[in-house]
Length: 237
Ligand SMILES: CC(C)(COP(=O)(O)OP(=O)(O)OC[C@H]1O[C@@H](n2cnc3c(N)ncnc32)[C@H](O)[C@@H]1OP(=O)(O)O)[C@@H](O)C(=O)NCCC(=O)NCCS
Image (cartoon, rainbow, N blue to C red):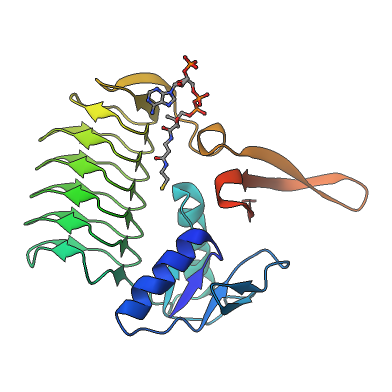
């Protein structure tokens, strides 16, 4: 297995794989200055490396990297990592590239999409549908038959009551209690969870900032998303 993203999140996935007897051959990362992570080498070219899990916490960047890898290598296989202490119903379905951390519980007939993160101690109850590229943060409880749209991040320790719909690309703040449907593309938080603004998952919400990428004479060739809480830089453009 290879892990794209030499990050703290990647180290957690590496240890889950180890607990399942799967060896991580190497990390892969765009940053040429990172050469070691979690005791494994870091490569800088993903060509033909497979199977792979994209170990980047930020939903939008994880999606961009998955799409880039699939474009460059149509034969790529995306793996999964499910910690042995997680309880996953035999009737639940989990998509490719998804990781399920220690102590998580996924109950009957839940459907978890591809390239999701079900983080430490999170619970997803019966008949929930969690679409692709979501992050259900540590200690979140999603009650039965709730639908979470693609790319949404439910912040650490939040609770969501049953039979709701949370839209796509939302940011639900830490410790929220979600008692009503939430539309697409918003940031919402609190108890009860209320909409605060349009979503800003890419920058301020991650305690990071956008910084221009400069070459030679100072021409702007793209933007890096500097994600401070992960202490690394993603090359987003
Ligand atoms: C919701 C969130 C994204 C807002 O980030 P932000 O836009 O940078 O917001 P700020 O820190 O500037 O706070 C703005 C105001 O909202 C309040 N606030 C922020 N997050 C809040 C939350 N989750 N619940 C209640 N109030 C919150 C702040 O106290 C502040 O109030 P003030 O203006 O009265 O001082 C962020 O606080 C959050 O909850 N992130 C989730 C992190 C997470 O789940 N991490 C898990 C990693 S695995």
